[in-house]
Structures are given as C-alpha cells and as structure tokens.
Amino acid sequence: MAVVENVATRPTTRPATPGPAGPARLPHLRGLDGVRALAVVAVLLYHLRVPWAPGGFLGVDVFFVLSGYLVATLVLEEVEATGRFRTGRFLARRVRRLVPALLAVLAGAAAAGLVARDALTSLRGDLLAALTYTSNWWQVVADRSYFELTGRPPLLQHLWSLAVEAQFYLAVPLVALLALRAGRARVGQVAAVLTVASTVAMGVLAARAGMPVPQDPTRVYVGTDTHAMGLLLGVAAATVWRPWRTWRATGSWAAERGDAVRRFEAGVTDVAGVLALAGVVACVALVDEFSVGLYRGGFLAFAGLTVVLVGAAADPAGLLGRALARQPLRWLGERSYGIYLWHWPVLMLTRPDQDVTLPDWAAPLVRVGVTLLLAEASYRWVEMPVRRGALGRAVVRLRTPAPGRVRAAVVTATVTTAVVAAAVVLAVGVVRTPTPGSAASGPTTAGTSAVPDAIGSVVPEQDRAPSAAPTADPAPAEEVGAVTAFGDSVMLGAAGELAARGVLVDAVVSRSFGEMVDLALGAGAAGSLGHTVVVHGGTNGPVAEEDLRRLLEGTAGHRVFVVNVRVPRPWEQYDNELFARVVPEYPHARLLDWKSGGEANPAWFYDDGIHLRAGGGREGYAAWIAQEIQPAG
Image 1 (spheres, rainbow, N blue to C red):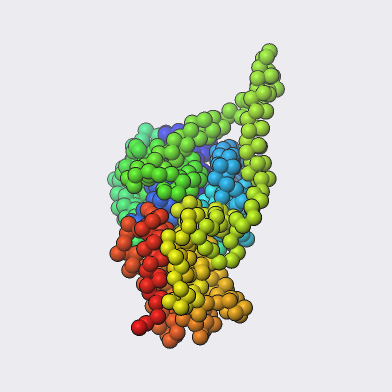
Image 2 (cartoon, one colour):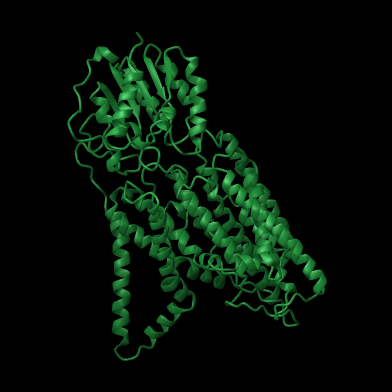
C-alpha cells in the first residue's frame, strides 16, 4: 500500500527550476495519484469477488512499486542536495503519515469485534501485530490464509502489506548510507541484485511447497523476503528516472535538451506507459492467485510493467500523467490509503445474506459507499490535520495554554484516549467462554448449535444445522447402510436433512480436506466408521493428492463417495480435476458430481455460490446425497 507523499518537502504543483543552489525539488506528481486510484480499485474489485478481476490483488504490487520509487527518490534527492540524510526526520514523517489513520481503523475494528463476536478471537493477536507492523509474519505464524474467504476472515488481515512496507522503511537509512558512500548508480545496482534475489527466493520456496497448488500461497505471498521485488525494482528505477528535472517551472517542455527532444521523449514515454497500463489491466483480468507463473518470476514481470507505468505517469511533460491526474482518479488516489485501510473490515462485516440482507445490485454499492465515506472522514479529519501539523500545534497550546483552554484540551485528550484504549483493551482482553455443547467435536445431527471454526468464528445462521425437528423419519439403516459423512460448512448447512435420512454427519466450518481424512481414518481405526463413507471437502482450498490417496487407501472395505466441489474460487477446477483423475483408480470409491448438480440448481445457493439456502437448497442437497449412495439394484 503506497503511503508516501510524492512531494519532497511540501505540496506543490510547480517544481523549482534546477539551478546552482541545488537539484530540482520533487513536485507533486498528480499522475501518480491516478496510478494509486487504479491500484486501490483493483484491490476493491478483487475483495468484492468480481469475476472479471481475479488478479485484482496485484494492485498491492502497484503500491509496492510506487512506494519503492517515491521513497528512494526522496532519499536520493536529499542526499544529493544536502550531502546527508536525516533518518529521524524521515521516520517521523512516516509515523505521521501512517499511524493516526491506522489507529482509527484499529479502534473501529476492536469496537466491531464486540458486536461481531466471531471476529473477536482473531483480533487479539492481530491488534498487536498491526501496532508493531508485523502482520505479515504473524499471519504466517498463525497459519492464516490470505486467499481463502470462507467464514469470516480476520478483520485486519489486509494489513500484511503495510507491514511489508514498514519493514522496508527501516532499511531506507541503509539506502541513504550507500548513496552517500558509493553514489546513486551503486544504489540501483544493489537494488537490482536484491530484486532478483527476492524473486529467486519466492520461486524456490514455492517449488518446495508444490505451489501454487496444492499448498496455500500465503507464506510466499506475504513474506517480506519473497515479496520485496516490487519495492526494490521501484528503488532501482528511482536511480535512473527523474523526468521532472527536464520540466521548467513554467510548465513548458523546455529545459536541458530543447523542446523537440523533450517532446519526442514524452511521446515515447506515453506510448510505453499506455502499453504498460494495458498489460497491468490484462493481468488483473486474466491472472489469479494460483497462476503458476506468478511464483516463478511473474511478480517480477508485473513489477516491471508497473515501473514503466509509474515512470510514464511521473513525467510532467507526458499526456498519460495528465490523463491519470483527472477526477475522479485524483480524488480516489489521494484517499487510497484510507480506502485500503477501511475496505477490508467493512467488507468482512457486511457480507451479503450473512451480515446484511440487500438486493444483489445494492450490496456492492452500499459496501463500497460505506468504505468511501469512512476513507473521506479519515482523510479530512485524521490524515490531513496531522500532516499539516495539528499534533505539533496541540502540543504547543498545551505548553502555553490560554486561560481555561488547558482544562478543555486535557479533558478532550483524556476522553479520546480512553475511548480508543477501551475499545482495544476490550477486544484484546475479552475471551469468549464456549457454552457446553457449543463446539461440535463429534457427529452433527439436527438441532446442532453454532459451531466455532478453527479460529473461533461462529457459523452464520444459514450455515447452521436447523434446530427444528427432522423433516422425515430416519430411513432404516439397511437402506443405505451405516453412513458416516464428513464435510465443512456446505454439508453442515444440510446436517439436519441428512440426519433425517439416516446419515451421521461430522461437519465444521472451514474444515480442510486433510482434517476430514484424519477423522475418517481415526474412526476406521476405532471401529466407528460406517460401511458407507461420504466425504465432501475442498471448499476451503486446494486438496493435496497425498491426502486424497490416504483416504482412499485407508478406507478399503468401505463404500466411499467423494463429492467434488462447487466453489467460485481459483482452486475449484484443480480440485475437481484431481478428484476425477484419482478416485476412479480405486474400485471401492465413486465420485459424486456436486459441481454439475449445483450448476443445474442455482436457486439452492446464497449469493456466494457456495452455501445452501434454507429449505430447497438444503433439502435438495440431502436428497441428492441419499439417492446417489443407494446400493445398486
């Protein structure tokens, strides 16, 4: 998330002319606001699960390149102008720019956790990680998945990118030191070498894990070591590309080389920038997080496209930068930090048909509208006042107060601090004590209460087994045999209907396929596994072939039915192709095609395309399972 002002010392639209006193001051490059806008819109579309933007997560990489380019430019300009670099001043500006808006979001998320209590448990560690800018490594340690969105994901999950950038800022003084001792060119050379090293590290770790499938790519994706290529490539670009240096304060295209040459350069830059922009848009539309090429140099290639786009947008003489500086792109770009901070918790607290009930067309408009309102409030009343010195002026007023002013100031500060602290402390300290029977460690039947998932979130109402009595008398066991079924939130939704047909269900939200295999084999070893076994997994991520074969080899002597998946996520095709290839190799096993059955009955599903609606959807699923597992003849 790019959070660096593109101004060296103060906002301005007119750069100083190079002269004997020193190099040109970095102007406000409004074209980069447009690039920020495109990046944050891509991220929004991805998290809204818009089907034509599966690569919207690449917007974060655009921010990385921007941050690397602008931070390195500020450092190199200061070193060149003054012969020194003030580390304390640099870090203080980053704190003023980053922290106030972040604290507002943390307070909001903490307060929301007291209402949406299924988000509370994950907030305990997330708040501390966010405050220390270690969210990316915390997610790795906590075994979180950035890409799986089943259930309610943690409200602060998106802060991993801010952590990566903050960790990069700590290395900026080393860039300044290298520039002071070895010069601008050497900074670019070292940055280029480290860019390649980060790309190689990503490729090696991905290959070792068998990625991008079957393993979840979160570790490789959020690691500072493996995802620094965009930041580093931006640094390298800053050492060679300073187009504002050849742009006069009058705004004309005259400077060191003359109008004709400058016009030609600007034209070439514009053409390259438009082509790069088309490439970026194509990647957003065609790439997804499980694309093999991404983890084998693809992120570096995308960063290369972004560098060209950023370079073209940064050229004050170019037409592309002027086009990107127009409204509403400029408005979105100026507020992109706040939009990024607020969009994720807003989206996770307003899930259609789970948290809010809205018409299909209205849900995205309302969710985005709330995000933009919060971002505007953050920009107007938090970010800009702090950047303009409000905190410093407040300190001065407190030190030399007018009569009666100190009491009001102290009271205001105390109340504000107390409210924020109370929200954070409550979210961190409140630990929900499960009521007896609230966690389902064994088979689930009709009447099941809310079931916490692996991170303590509660199954939404539509995913719970109904509390009403079974809709029909259980079928005699001999009709379908003793049936044991293992699943996740999809099966859990129809647990009551399955129980009414004599199926013993063990289903929990967010359960992985590997966990289902372990449960089935454990039941087999204990002698409690039914003669007929149904396993419906893969909703929450790619299935490992090893786990599938463990299941099929360990259940010989049973009738095993593996249900494929209908989940509008990138791993759907991978899982279903794996099932279709492996299951027929085992004579005692059969594949059930839920994908086709679900496609034929879209009315059975909520808007997420995964979970079953009450009534027809759950009843239809249960009837289909019971019919498919009937003995032949």
